[in-house]
Image (cartoon, rainbow, N blue to C red):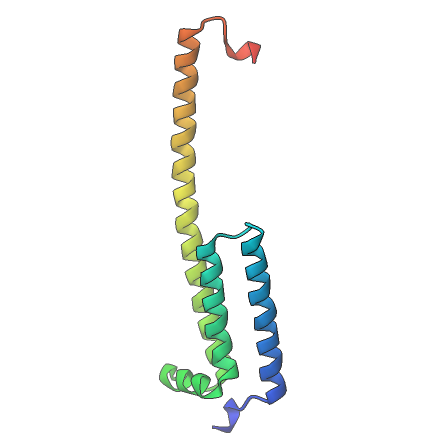
Length: 127
């Protein structure tokens, strides 16, 4: 399978990019700009994606199992699958946040109504 050969230079570049990406993810984690579960997920995905390129037999095996002709097409296929999976996860989280926001705004409205009934002088015009 000559068409799956990857040069050493390409492997080193991919490994360096992955190392920079993992370092960036860890720095976001330490700055509390990313939760630990997301950081762990991105680090695992980076390691898996990088191992497919750096460790050549893994890419050959995945390409053979998938029935795809070239390694580049295999990487593209799995990149699309990964992107759709991330979109699904974000959609689930967005739906959860929307529901929580709706419940909180309803509770605030109810509390404001109760407060206005208890204190008639404290209305929205004075706020």
